[in-house]
Length: 156
Image (cartoon, rainbow, N blue to C red):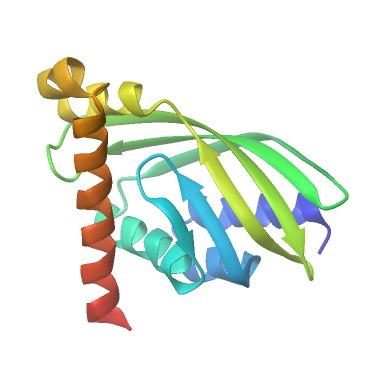
C-alpha cells in the first residue's frame, strides 16, 4: 500500500472504531508520540488506540483531511470530538500528525496538539487555571500512562 493510502486507511479505520485495522497499519516496531501519552513503542502504541476506542463506547467522532506523503514521510490533519471519560466534558481536539514509513507500514507517528487547549476543554476551570503548568501536564501524562499500563495488564 502506498504511504498516502496507508495514512488514509489508518484514519478510516479510526473513524469506524476499528483498532485492529489501525494496528495493521503500524509496523511492529512503531513509535508513537503525543503530548498526553508521551512516547509509546510497539504493542503500547497499538493498545493505546484500542483502549481509547473501547472507552469511547462509540461516542468518538474522527474527521481527517490533508493527507500527504512523499517518499518515507507523510502528514495529516485530524480532529477528534468526544466526551472526556474522566469529566464528561466535550472535547474537540485539533491534531496535526507526522509519519515515517518502513516496510510498507507506519514506523513513526507523532501527533502534535495544544495540550493547554485540550486541558481547558477536558478539565474546565482547573484545566484553565492549571493546564499550562508543568505540574498539571505531568499529572495528565502520568494518569494516561498508568491507565495504559493497567489496560495492558488486563488485555495482554
